Amino acid sequence: MPLVNLFGSKGRLVLSALLICAIIFELAHCQKDTQEQRTTPGRKLKTSKPKLGKSTNKGPRAVTSKSKLKATPAPAAQTLLTQVLNRGKFKKVGETISVQTGDTLELRCRGKPVQWSVPTYLEDDDDGRLRIVQQDRYGALTLVNTTGADTGEYTCYPMYCEDSDCRKEYDKAVKVFVFFPDPQELFVPTSDYYEVIQLRTNWPTLLPCQVTSPEAKVTLHREYPPVEVAVDGSEISFNVRKGFTIHRPRPYHAGALYCVASLGNLRQSSTKYMLIYVNYPMAPPAPVIQASSSSVAVGENLRVSCSVVGEQDVVIEFTWDYPGQEIGRPPYTKESVTPVGGGEAQQQSQSVLLVDEVRDVDQGTYTCTAQNLQGAKSVSTTVKVVPKSKPRKP
Image (cartoon, rainbow, N blue to C red; front, side, top):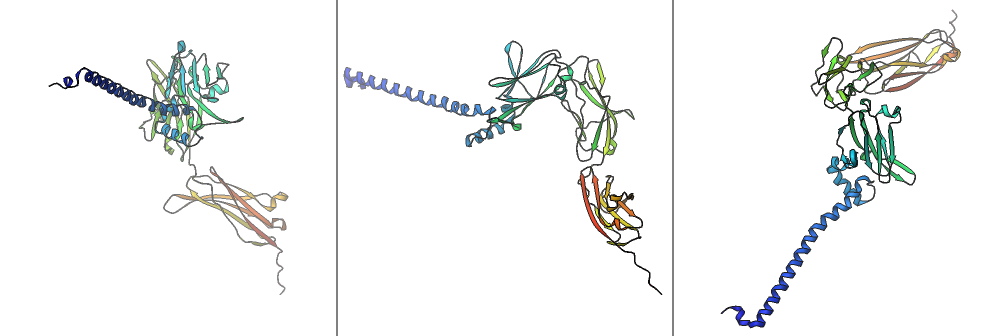
């Protein structure tokens, strides 16, 4: 017999009511679960999002937010900087953007306040084309009547302020390299025909060779003998935003070099770079001073030597301070450089101060200062002058 018939009509009504209640309860429970799933992530995003453009020195929550940004720094930082396009459209910028010459560049950087850094050319003379305004929630940079010379790096620095004291937050700086392709100028214009650059043994050397278009193909050339310089990416590498980098300069890199850019039917040469090789020392010199005698009789000759043992081909300059300067006694010095044997190639640089026929005025402190490109150091010694001994009577 069916179960409904056992309960009769009243039983069917009670059973229907129970089923309806069960359905309503289940729907409410599901809706609560769904609502929790939607609201929980939303609250997390809401607490972390406003911290992208603000100082992170505000306790544990800021540290948590900072660690999240560190895991994906590029997207978080780049949301601070946008480019304003025509008709009020906005575009997030990447590492580089291109703006046709003559068009207007407009950048917005979220933060209150912010500071801007622009290419040196614009800092020196922008002809009134550059305008920087601080709005309530962002800083705006506008550059009109643009040219290829405006090509370079534009940087926005959020500021952290306490009362009237503000400082740049360098770790939150947002940079974009802006190209202004010029159909007539492949290289960023410069007034210098030659640029002298030191090839330092302890530092990479950069040949700017900045182009106005990222599409230009750039090669490196030597003036004499005329040959294209190999760029292998290890010894010498190229970056379209920076130029050519000589990572470990050597003597054979010295000479006159220049860059050649080509795009379509246009081919142009850059400024010439005169590379001068300098064997840059690892540390300041450590001079040692020694007098021929700490006690010299009047009328005898005195010899004070100052020597430095160091790297080969590193020039050492010596200067002296001595008691005879007070009366204008002329300095007599002799300098020499001799190789020193050992595992590594070294040399001894020496300066000798000669004092002929010592007088009483020559008594005192003798100071030698040795200097190289890394710094200078002084050492001193004291010499006593005694009366001339009388010959013994027979």
